[in-house]
Structure formats: structure tokens, C-alpha cells
Length: 271
Image (cartoon, rainbow, N blue to C red; front, top):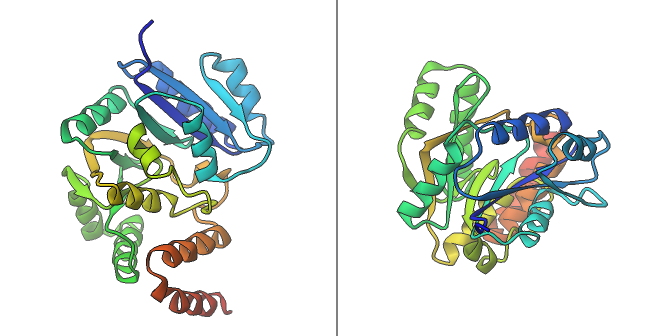
């Protein structure tokens, strides 16, 4: 029997339709290397697990008894598998033929600990899915560019296109599609489960870098990301979860900013 080389872990919460589309894309043109697909379900109420078991019998399902959050569910998947490479993949993604193989090839060629592909939206516009370590200025600068690109500003879109067209070493890549070596993930302590949702990918990449690992942005692989739909049909950013994770991130990595961030968040919420 050929040993499995890659585990694909998909965390799901009430996204049965998108999850089915994601799995169909994976099974229509599966990676060439031996692989295993695992769905970790965060106590969905929309019949997601029934859909997977009925329509995708080759896919393993772990049904958690509660909504444990994105980091904890991914960790459950990592602990339940054993392949040397692990792909963390959102349920709101569509994977074209060859994309995962190209991502794995680039990870191997670069000797990186983790890698992320070029993510594009449903219209094919690239997402700025990598960045520098978070600081208030870095967040402001990147956020300003991303918002302008989403509004359709031609110069912003051209800038994002340029930034997502070249392979480079980065501080973090998006957890919507993140390939990592298992030994590096384990050495980093897996994802920090104090994050329920948001910032866990930036924190995880920081832990990988602290252990000497390189983070690679690899646009040779392109995957469609239907942004925001993997959180159960809610808006792309839930303020309470985001604010909580944001403050936890800065409390862990740059605590001097926490009082100022708390003040800014209070002022922002005022009518």
C-alpha cells in the first residue's frame, strides 16, 4: 500500500453547499500524490456531515460535539492524521486541477515550512493573501489597499495583481489554504486554540518562523476563495470574534499596543 503523502483538512461550520462544491473540485481532479481528505465539522446544524457521508464516502468526517473554532478544529484534524504534509483548506474554496501538486512542489523546492497559493475571488480578482507581521501601521497600509481593490480602484487592483504575481518569502500566508510540514507544525505547537476565529494563521506562521521555518507565497498555484462563506454564511468579518482575536494577537506579540487598540475599538463602536 502506498503511504499517504498529504492530508487535506477542511474545517466546516454550516456550509454544506460550499463544502460539497469544494469536495467535488478536489475529487474531480485530485492531487497526484497519495492523499487523504478529512472534514472536521464544528457541530453544524445544516446536515453537512450527512451530505459528506452520503455523497463523498471516500472522505473521512470527524464530527465535533461543539463549535470549537477554527484553530481547535484544524488541530483536531492534524492530530487525527499522520502524513508528512498537511493542507489546511477552507470549505469556501474551489481547487482546480494541479493546484495542490504545484503548491507541494514549490514547498519542497524552496525547503519552506509552510506555503500558501495565490487566492482569487469568484471573478478571478487576486486576494492579497500574504503580508508582513502585524503592526498597526502594516494593518492600516494593507487594509487600505485591500479596501480600494475591492471597490474596483484600478491602481489598487494593479498593485494587488503585482504583489500576488511573484513568489516570495513572507511573514504569513492566509489560513484559507495553508500547506505546512507536519514536523514543523508539531514543533510550533500547532495552532493556538485561544483564537476562536481570525489571526490564528498569522500567529501560526509567526510560530513557524520562530522555529526557523520559512513561509512561502507561491503564486504558481492558484485557488478560488469565495471569501467569508466558510463561517456559515455570515458576513466576512464578525466584529466580536475579530476584535477578540485581534487583541489576543497583540497581547501575545506586541502588548504595548493593547491599550491603544482597546481605546480605538471603543471609539469605533460609538454611534
